[in-house]
Amino acid sequence: MDRWLDRVLGPDDAADPRRRAARRGVVGVLVGAVIMLVAATALAATGSGPDVLGLSGSSSGPAGAVSSSSDDDGPPPLTTQPGSCLTWSRDDAGDVREVDCAQSHLFESVGAVTAAQPPGAPFPADPAWQQLVTDQCTPQARDYLQGRLDPAGRYKAGALKPTQAAWDAGDRTVRCGLQAPGRTGALFASTGRVTEADQAVVYDPGTCLGLAGKEVSDPTACSETHAAEVAGTVDLGTQFRGGFPSVDEQDNYLQPTCQRIAEQYVGSAQKLTDSKLTVYWTNLAEESWTAGTRRVSCNLGSLLADSSGFAPLTGKAADGVTIGGEAPATAPSLRPGAPATVPGTTTTAPAPEGGAAGGAAGGTATQPGAGQQPGVQVPSLPVPGLGGG
Image (cartoon, rainbow, N blue to C red; front, top):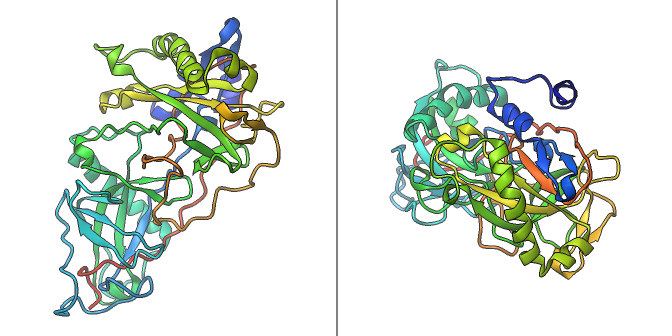
């Protein structure tokens, strides 16, 4: 079994919590004692980014435009104070503004850093900005959360950078923050501060998760082609009140629990059987548990005959879902940093990170391959009061 897992998932890597979770959680308990193997990376996906968004001194106009922040009629400057929250609704983020964190927002500041390039240095390319996020913003985000940043949770470190015009004028300020990216890089809104939030990647029952090729993507309307449908959520903290429960312990509890939730969701055990859908769930890795995450998702999906990924679904499970058809080749095209939506629900969390492990019930032996996230493009995001005037 270990050699087989090595071929599918790669060698065990104790330094990579997502791969380790995938190896440990890849075996699920099936109805009828059949063993189903599901690669964690195929269960669902979020942007693995970091998103690095552009800034300017203008609160309106085309992305990347620069105007003076000293205009008496302009908006107040945005601070870099940790705990401040930003949001926007336009695709080009031209209406970005600071809001109370109790309101819906897309970005929570954890502080600011200074890009270490001298005056006259050329504007960095995307990989350099992303490296800055990894090297400086991610540690700052961990410190802000007192070490409780779930590596497989809904929040990722990101940054707001100067536009090239502001950079040329000498602005080197980079705002570091926390955000919830989807697979495309589009950002899902949050309410409340991350310091007080459950970082679980869960959705309202009835949310359908899109299909990109053979992999799970961002939420979509259930009338559109999708990979999975959320049946419900389980709080493992109500069952396991002590230390971290092993994946086997989680599976032993989640198999009957998710089965029951799915039967209730579609209307009966017979309707679930007739749907020919598989019940699967996500597991928590120890790193997620330590960060305070407790909730996991119970989902419904169907796998391709060759076990290479998820089959296309159309419609709702309770209404007679259609299995099969042509899958979209790619995730929906959304601008990185643009506001994302969850069709038909009030939830604004992204789909689970590719490293989230899971088990399954009611299916056949499968092992979809692990996919890679596309590179993150860097859009321009005008933010008032942070340079370029």
